[in-house]
Image (cartoon, rainbow, N blue to C red; front, side, top):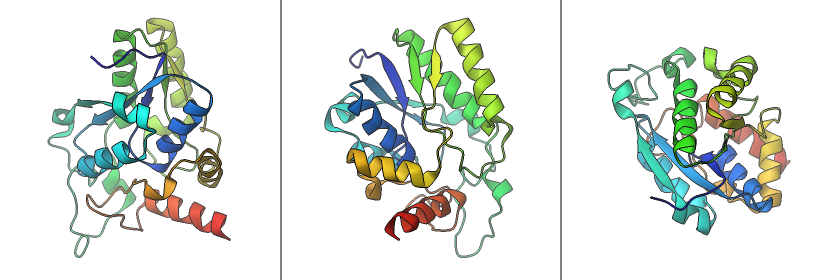
Length: 209
């Protein structure tokens, strides 16, 4: 078992969760980074990236869980990688049923089993996802439910921030945001065209200007 901590950080190797890792460190909040493999085609590169971008002590405490069987038969292009040369991808092709509900529920159950009171998540309001479990109302209701029936609190410090604001915060904290990976379409390299890539590139370009 990994060392005990006060909280759990849902971490993916993306810009937002990496910034949150350094935000927690700056506040001396102890946490265990948790990577959940839900069958996403980019799980390998996400995990490798996560290990390289976390603060050293956090990387040593990193834990992983696989729930890949849940989406084994999903046709989502987040699960089954498309052919970038031939396949036309629409935002609806990136839908994964109840993904955020599942991720937060698993993280909360994991946290309670370790006597950790808080799960930190880096969801922000600039995401383009249209799933029913991406709305502010959903997150607020789920947080209330988990706190009431399991004593685990969901904290999303960046929920009302833009991607640019998170980028600027990450830079101020010394987070290696240039090394992060959060592409939804390619399992090997950032495609530059999916919602996550566009958000990230737009924010970095705005900061550069």
